Amino acid sequence: MDSLLVKDNPLLLPMNKERTVYDGFITVQVRLHCCWRLKHLLRGYEAILKQVKAISNNKFEQRVCVQSRPSALSIPHPQSYSDLLSELETLGWDKLVFIDTDFRTLRLRANDSSGREHVLTVKLKTKHPTEAPECAADVPVPLVFHWTPQTTLAQLHSQFLQLVESLREFWDVLDEIDQKTWVLEPEKPCRSDAMRRIAIGNNASIKVEVDPRHPKMLPECCLLGAEHVVTPLRNKLNANMHLWNPECSVLLNLRDVLEIQFPSPATHEKSSLSVECGICYSFRLDSGIPDQVCNDPRCGQPFHQDCLYQWLRALPSTRQSFNTIFGECPYCSKPITVKMAVQK
Image 1 (cartoon, helix red, strand yellow):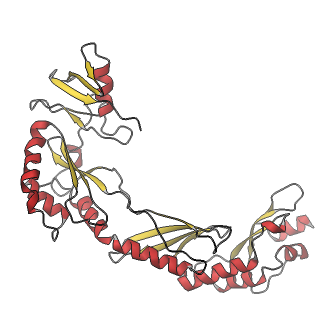
Image 2 (cartoon, one colour):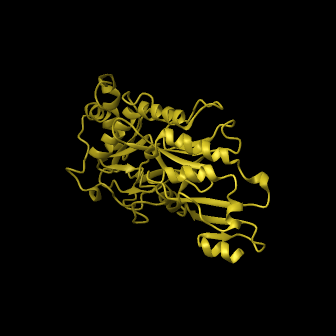
């Protein structure tokens, strides 16, 4: 009889030697034709099978996961599946990106008014809906949702949509920076990243940290590069800070305050801005890029912090004071310092 069960349902596999546990898929028809053993396994799930069949035209495969377990206590009540399917029907199947075979992990999509797609991962607890689900999304702020036993997936999705819409201006600011400048870090920004390190030229860059809640206000800025390059820029930033206009874009404000034009994909090749480390001869090292530069104007060679630290530490002429090492540039022998690399 076991062989007949598997023969009639080739995607249904026994999970133990006793053949008391099965995992797999069955094809759903208007009327279910199968052997008595399978009918016994599906007892109590008839209404759900009909619902799955009814929604199969909405890009939902005509297959349902069937699991038979020795303990009846471990099987969720059939009504919980029925309620979940009804909630998804109300929400709209176009909002569903993924659902696992246990009907416990879902991914829901939400589009903000700028057309960006965001995905909310929802993990339903065993006591759902009494217990709030675990939620995760690629956003720069903590996910805080109001949940009660009466809260539906549609209401949860609505709260998520309100959140991503409130962050729309923040992503507008960063998208403009990504499109109109050469961003050195992060290499592949995600939606939760609020930091951008923007190339300026002459082995110099500026690191900006945008506030997700106040994206058009003056961000935290840190200029990186040789002192003879960044000191004039730092002076301009301090002198022109009062010119910052929240009604204008962050990129435009940075140009006005620093009195520079940022290299862009339209005017510069990225290879001309991605100068390799003078020690390891690579640009990226463990996702980091060269951020230490020789201050001598005639040299200006960049290095990875860890490369320069390891190089100087091996030289007998190097001095160390607390977490700072004093030595000579490997290229021009002029004085150079580097702080001890922070262990990640």
